[in-house]
Length: 242
Image 1 (cartoon, rainbow, N blue to C red):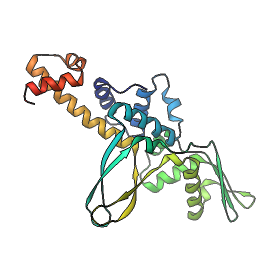
Image 2: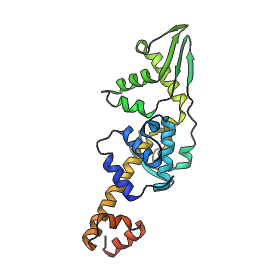
Image 3: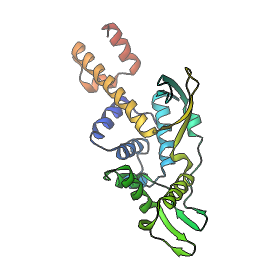
Image 4: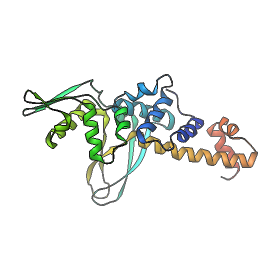
């Protein structure tokens, strides 16, 4: 897997303008897997999608992730330093999984990107949840009687959600955090795709600023600036006092 170049970052951020989060994740996957089609990438489980994105992030920006989280108790900001290798140590998704509770039984498949793409048109989180259930629930039974996804009651929907989580343990990256000020411990979800995209947008803004300064100072074209290595660009910018 090759790192994203500054030109790649600019191109991806331009192409992703106005896209939803799932489509942006697929754009990044396409950059990491140029031989794969959009349809193939959209069939990856969310856990596998995020593992690939984290690998691409590691070779592009480095293995360490630095973030901030707000303590739910005292509201202080906690610094979070993460190692990509630890985040990659998640279980593989299974093709199907069956789970039962009392006389209710369900069989599901893992959620994939095409499911999220289809759900982005939903108007509320509850609609999203029901949409995902209808797409990923393969079968459900009360005793020996089959049950349609539209006839499930809330406790049964909860079991479907539990089965979906068990089918792809890497789909949710839950971080165990602690507040250095008050000692509060809590968990927070890391959205790997959104986090990486936000980092790339910040990098894109920095690259555009570098292009502006160097083009104005030396009369270079954008392609000329991008052809210069990041180290040499920094050296030129230092000479300009930027």
